[in-house]
Length: 134
Length: 386
Image 1 (tube, one colour):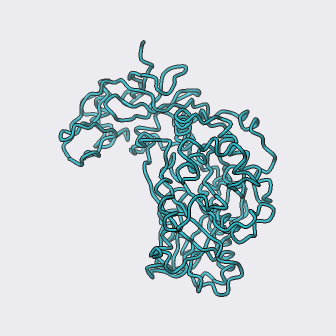
Image 2: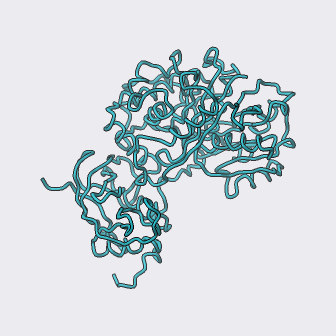
């Protein structure tokens, strides 16, 4: 990957999400933080959903979170994923909720999870989650 | 003081289904034309009387394409995409337009051949630059079963609803379908059979999910004096409400609550009735657990109580809250957007013309639509026998 590769050009990103995907290349999970009220948000917007301020910065997320909901997909949906697999909503400790996969045989709502990365051909690594140790 | 939208009463003066099921001898436009002619005919009206046109899913600039086909040049028009609930939204908007003098005769219509065309998409395109393509598609979420499964799983976890509670919804719908000659599937169904059907996305099994069929319909909204020659009894629109929330499932703060809370509150307040007054309930039964959420959000029971509420057959024929009386999206017809058929069935029940499935003495009916991905949109319409 070169520094000037534009994921927007690939259709993998848009100009507002490009910083997120660029960080994914380095396997860093990032979210927006409002410099006025301190709230975190994802996906990115040019304003804060909480206080409507327009100064936001990209910050690294700890990468830990809790499963809010979970389903096992048992039907074919994507050529890239062979069922069954776990599809989940994960609440990051910073607040934002992500749709993701849990790379495990089974998991439950409320389980603690940690970010992991799935390689993709020609696209930035995709943030997925694994059950946290202990 | 009456609500400004109901100070001069508005009525559904005509209602008709398109051909249903698997439709090979019509186009979507010709299906709509047949239903529109029948619905207008009930009201003693013709296409020339239509001055407002509302549609969804009829192609780009849908009301323009449909208007051309029907020879209608409306002075009020809308092709808002509110998913399957669009038609309840349209009743609300037609009330507003009629009350403010923007139109007199509103035609609301839709048809789909999603079954015959096999064109129902499973996911957003992988690389279209959309937020869905970036943050949903790579994880293999089925549109919309995956979204609704995440809602159902959270709901069951949070409130202890059981697979039997979900299955009861499918069984109730099927019992009604058995009384409706137009229903797509009419064979008897048991709780055990629902729970033995293949799991698609836990906890949703095949028989927790609605049908994929062709179909549609048309309704006509007007003041009563515009339908003096009506062949059939007009049904009064007592109230309507609407709301929408998230599109992307991760943006929903609470997947156990739907925008029906807001749409129901507004509709009941405008109508001046309470959930306990409702004789017939036509919920958008795209998935079994969805009906449980609607019952709670519209106030038929408390939050988390719908499983127990339905488990004594309350929604079945002979129950105290007859619901999905056509057989619903689960057993009668689900043409991609069910909302138009909920209104038509409510009208049939209030006119007393529902045949073997007629709810005796039905005076107040509620059609409650939802749309989008895991309860993105909601609109509630309260109707009454005049």
